[in-house]
Amino acid sequence: MATGPRQLSQAYAAMERGVIRKPAAGRIRVALVYPNSYHVGMSNLGFQTVYRLINDIDHVVCERAFLPEQDGGKNQRVLTVESQTPIEDFDIIAFSISYENDAPAVLTILETAGLPLPAARRGTTFPLVMAGGVFCFLNPEPLAPFIDAFLLGEAEVLISAFFETFDPSVDKQDNLLDMARRVSGLYVPAFYQVNYKEDGTLAEFSPLFDVPPAVRRLVVPDLSKLPTASTILTPDTTFSDTYLIEVSRGCPHGCRFCSAGYVYRPPRFRPLGLLDPQVDEGCALTDRIGLVGAAVSDLPGIRELCAKDRGREVRFSFSSLRADALDGPLVDALKKSRVKTATIAPDAGSERMRRVVNKGVTEDHVVAAADILVAAGIPNLKVYFMTGLPTETDDDVAAIVDLVKRIKHRFLQTSRGKGRIGEITVSLSSFVPKPFTPFQWVAMDDVKTLKRKNKMVKTGLKKTANVRVHADVPRWAYLQGVIARGDRRVADILMLAHRNRGNWPQTFKASPVNPHFYVHRERGPEERFPWDFIDPGIDKSFLLKEYRRALAGRSSAPCPADPSKCSICGVCKGRPGG
Image (cartoon, rainbow, N blue to C red; front, side, top):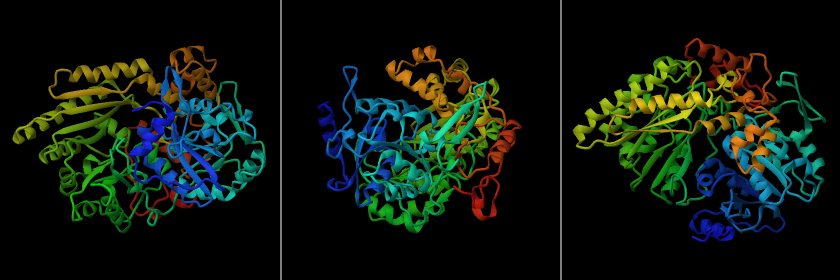
C-alpha cells in the first residue's frame, strides 16, 4: 500500500461501505478527528455515531481524519478520508477522545495542521477546535489550554443543540460566549479561571464571564427509540466487517474502579423491539453482529435476540459477558458464531478484593463459567485481572495465580473430554484511579510496585502449561494516571512531551510540574478535584460513602431494575444532568 497521506486516505475509503458524502458548498464543514490510527478509530462505535449524527444535520457536512503516520520521523499531513482535504481547511476541527493516552496526539495533529497549540493564540482565521468523548466528560482539564470548546456528555443531546446555535459568520469569542450561555454541556475553558492553594491543590474554579459556574454532563434519558449501530463497515478494524449494535449504556453493577459504570448512570437498556430490526439490518450487510454495551448479558431479551431464526447463519459477538450470567442460550450463541476465544473478567484474584471493588462475582462463578465455555467447544479463554487495586496485598496478588490454576484444572478436565486442550491467556492491567468513581480519592501504586506484582503473577504461572500471561506496561499506566487526574498544569507536561517528541522519561525529569502529585497522592475527603466543575448528576457524598465501604471490604447492591425506586447516588432523583 502506498504510504503518502493522500494515498492512505484513498486506500481507506476504497475498503469502506456506508461512507456518507454530501456536497460541501453552503454547509458548515466539520473534520471529525480520532487521535489514534484509522484501525483504532474505526473500531470505535461512538466515533462512528458522532460522524452519522453530524451528517444527519442538513446544513453541516462531516468528514473523518485520524492520527497521521510518521514518515522519516515526521508526521504526515492530516487529510480527511472522504475528500483528502487538509483538516485546517474546515470550519471546525472536532476531536473524539475516548482514552487518556490519546490526549498527547491532539497536540501532534494540531501542529501538523499548522495551528498554534495554545487556543489563546488562534485568531478568527483558524478553525474552531472542539473535543468530546468520554475522556472529555471525565476530566478535560489537561487539554483545556489547547481546545476552544468541549462538549460534555452524550452526543445525541449535544450535537443538534450546538449546530442550532453555532454561527460561523460571528466572531469566534462572541460565538463561544453566546453558546456557553445557551447550550447545556458546552464548556469553554477560556471563560473560567483556576487558582491553587500553597500546597498545590485546587482552591477555586470560577467563571470570568456570565456563564454557568458548573457545566452539566448531559445524557439521553431514554434510548428506547434511539438506535445506535455501525455507520461504516470496513475490514480494517478490531472486529473486521462486524456490524456493531449498542444495546445499552451504563452498568447496574457499580464496580468501583469503572468510570463507565458511574458517568453513564442511570443504566439504560434498549428494548428488543428496537434491537431486533437492527440485527436484521446488519444481517443484510454481513453475517457478523457485535452487541456492544457495558453490561450486555444484563439486557432483557438478549437470549431471544440471539436465538431467533433469521434465515441465515448469524455470528454474534459480545463486548462483555459477566461470569455469573453465562447460561445455555448465550453460550449457544457463542458456539454458533464459531468463537474460538471467550473472555471473562474476575478483575481480582481473591474474594476479599472482589468485595473491595464491588465486582459481585465469586470464584465459583468464574470457574463454572470457564467450565461452561470449554464444554461448549470454545477452546481458548482470556481472563482479565487488575493489579494495584486499593488495599491490595501480596496475598491478593498470589490469589490471582491460585484462581488461574483452579480455572486451568477445571479447563483441563473438560478439555480432555473434547480431545483438545486449548490455551488460557491471563491479561494483567494496572489499576488507574478515575474521576467520578469511588476510587477517585486513592493513590495509585508506583511503577516499581506494579512491575513487582506483575512479576509475581508471571513467575507463579511460568510453569503452568497452556497458560500465557500478558501484562500492560506500568509506565504507560502511570502516564494515564497523570492525565486522568491532572489539572490545567498538566497541559505544561503535555507541551513539554510534545517538544521532546514523546520522550516521557526526559519530560517527567525536566518538568517543573511534579507528575507524582497527581498519581501517588491520596486525596483528602474535602479536596476539590479539577473535574468538580462538571455536574455528573451523581452525589459526591455517595461516591465517598462507596469509597469508605470499599476500604471496609463491604460490597453494595446493584442498581435496581426500576430507577424510580432508587435515589442512592442522586442520578435518578431528577437532578440536573441526570
